[in-house]
Amino acid sequence: MGRAGRAAVKENLPRLRDEWRLDFVVVNGENASNGMGLSGDHAKGLLDAGADCVTLGDHAFDQKDMMQFIQNEPRVIRPINFAHGDVPGKGFRVFEARGGRKVLVAQALGQVFMKRAFDDPFSAVDQVLRTHPRGGMVQASIIDIHCEATSEKMGMGHFCDGRASLVVGTHTHVPTADTQILPGGTAFQSDAGMCGDYNSVIGMEKAEPMRRFVTGMPKARFTPALGEATLSGVYVETDDRTGQATRIEMVRQGGRLSQSGPI
Ligand SMILES: [Fe+2]
Image (cartoon, rainbow, N blue to C red; front, top):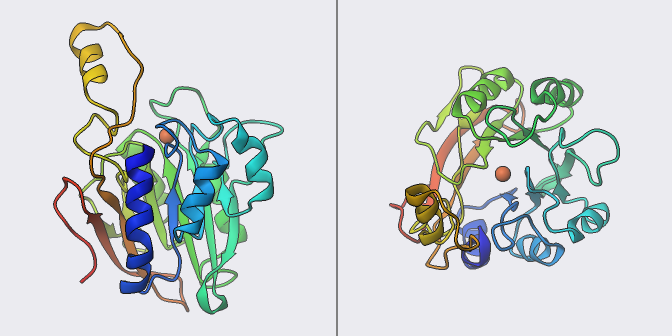
C-alpha cells in the first residue's frame, strides 16, 4: 500500500527470505502505487526485493503502463476473471521455485460487494486446479482470492480444500485471525492484511476518509498514509510430495500491529 508499503517490503523481504529460508514469495502489489494499482517500475521494485510473483486485483490496470508491462513480465499475474475478451497478462502461471519445484499461483476476484460484477471465480479456479493437481503436476499451489467478503473467501478456501496448498485472501487490507489448515490440508487465512501504515483507514491518510464518513462530503483526494508500515502476510510450509500444507503462521513485522511470524 503506497510508498510506506513498498518500503516495508524492500527493507524486510531480503532479510526474511534469508532468515526464514523462503523458497517462494508472492506479493500482492495492487495498491503499491499511490494506493491505486501498480506501475511497472514499482512492480520491478517488488520483484527486485525478492518477490517471485506479484499478483494484482480489481485495480490491476489503474496504472495504465501495467497493460504493457504485464505482457513482458510473466512474474506479474492479474485476476483470472478480470474481464471478458482481450485482457493483457495471465490469471495463473506455474513458476519454478528453488530446487526446480513447481508452484502454481492463481488469482481470482470475488463477486460479493465488489464494484462490478466479475465472472464466477469458483468455476475459473476449479478449472485451473483440475489441470494442475497438487502433488502431481505441481509441488504446491497458491490461490489468491481477492475480494471483500470473508464469507466468500472462506467458501473459496473450502472449495479448494484438498486441492490447493494455500488459499489466502487479499483486498481488504485488514488481516484476519482465522489462520488454519483446513481438513484436506489446505492452509487458509481469510485476509493476509496489507503492507502499509495501520495509523490510517485501510492504508489511506485518515483525515479524508473520516471526513467522508462523518460529514458525507468529500473535500480532498485520498492519499496513502506514510508512517512506518507493518509487513503483513502468511508463512506456509508444504509437503513436496503431496502438496499439503503442514504449517501456516500469520506474519506481522514492524509498524503498529503486534508482531508475529515463524520462530
Ligand atoms: Fe482490491
